[in-house]
Each structure stands twice: as structure tokens, then as C-alpha cells.
Image 1: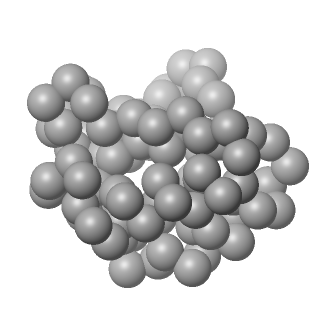
Image 2: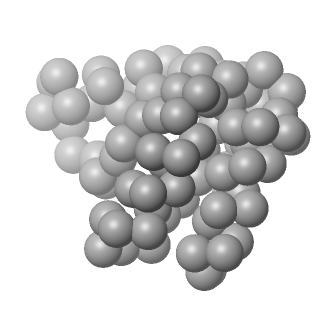
Length: 85
């Protein structure tokens, strides 16, 4: 199930399993992800979907760290194929 974090979150929603709020973005949707992070009203946890060798999660403290993290995952591909959803 954790091979895809996006699949796991969708599964939890479909089966009424409690989970935190989330939004899934394709790697081509960087600007939309940044806009969401700036306006969602809460801190975010960035997770690359897919196998990331035990990694794939960033916990930014500021919006600047969030934007940098999104670019690292979605553009630079710091977690390899994970995050290329």
C-alpha cells in the first residue's frame, strides 16, 4: 500500500479511514502546489509518492522551505522516480 502514498491516501478516503487533509499534485503542477501551500491555512508535509528508499518526506517550517522542498521533489527529483506522479 505504501508503494504509492497517493494510492494509500485515496484508499483511506474511499474506506472512511481517518487521515490528515491532503492534496495530490502531478510533477507538472509545481505552480499549483506552491499556490496551495501558500493558501491552505496550515503547515504542510511534503511526501513524494512512490518508493523513495525509506525517504520521501519533508517537513518544512516556512513557506520558503516549502517552495524549495516542492522544487526539490517535483523538479530536481531528489527522491528519484518517487515524486514524479
